[in-house]
Image 1 (cartoon, rainbow, N blue to C red):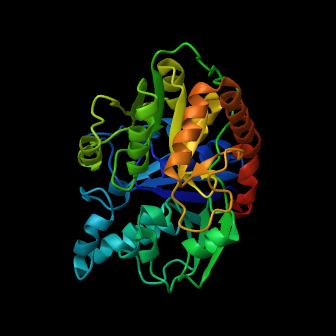
Image 2: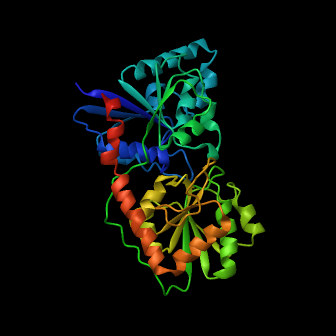
Image 3: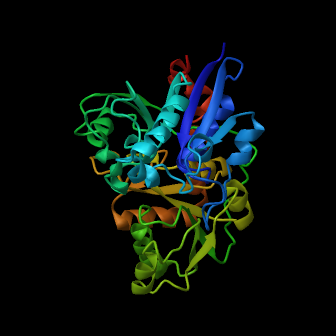
Length: 380
């Protein structure tokens, strides 16, 4: 008999939790494991994002449930939105029972993101789970959201924090937990490695790939562009990602630094690798975390071969900060970040060296078919 596992996810948008769920789903051995998904939002719920991964899961024979399937007439989407109606309403105890009965049918339940567990925790009976298994999808620099989880619950955290000092910092205050490091991983391929240094480009294009949101700070990059333009006036910054840049608060920096003619918002990209090759970018800036790229987009970027420089948002001590010799050079010194950017844009030998190191690292170290071994025992 197959082991039945359930992944809970907020939606099927093109985000980190959704991407990690699909990458795992694509390599799980389905001859012995029955993979199921419970999505807490209905399809077509966003004006900015498509349900990118929905059809992809169906294409690999994964069973998908929606909240409406489990709790009829729940029109609101996320379980958190109906929590108040369930609490204190005896009639709605039937809905709680229906959800718990559904969950009882699975050997393992995985929460793809701490916010997903927060949405469901107030609905389920206290201590329903003996141990809560959560894929942590954010870091403290993005906010303290996951640290608001109840501290009296036993957790198994799975995250990209692979150094003990990171684990200690990120889970400070939690006492009853275990942790499994699992770096963001994907199916690797050499097929998109088409980037070439362009010495004759009149305009140098720097790209940023991110969701436009206040939780995705871009201010260091705006200041870096402002300084860089003093020496390389032919540079442009192209920002790719869904969302409203004004709601994200970026317009204030752009206006203050007088960058409106040098920054272009290109919207959501279904295929980052194809977009990079089409746009012929020269460099990509990205958010980093203690010498690790902070997101799947960075891994896709590296598979094209384009050099990546990162601003470090890790709050701890990074002993390798501001060093261009690292595979993923991270910076907290604005002037050094700008100097490294100039070097990538102007020095072909240096740009190619960064490109080759990063491409090889992703191929060798971020292969999901290898890295899933760290959590295979959880599917038994």
